[in-house]
Figure 1: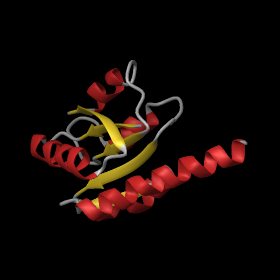
Figure 2: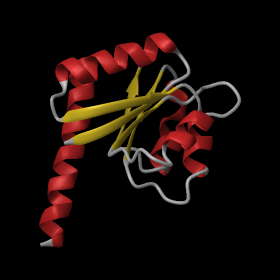
Figure 3: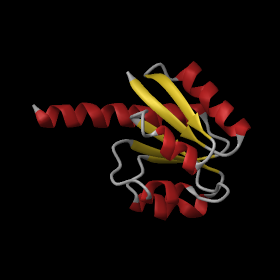
Figure 4: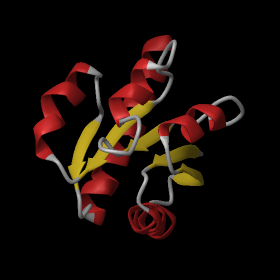
Length: 127
């Protein structure tokens, strides 16, 4: 059971991503969304996602502002953005993946499966 959070200022982008997650990725059982960095930070007070799908360019604060505002990052980050120039910066934040919009459902599924494999590896190492 994987919980996900979609952070994107564009309604259409959030809806498309949510549709893909709900219809093609059975591993994700719960999805919440936020339209801004501030809304996402507020949501994190009560919602603990395993994966965050994060847009980069948003009004007022960007995706990197979101990550730097956190005391610790306890989830995997999959960037979903229309801009390829932020990939190196995303790597610095240990992004699990960097998907360019329009997001391909197969690439999205592959990214989530990397999360599943990573979690399985972590459990093995703990045992």
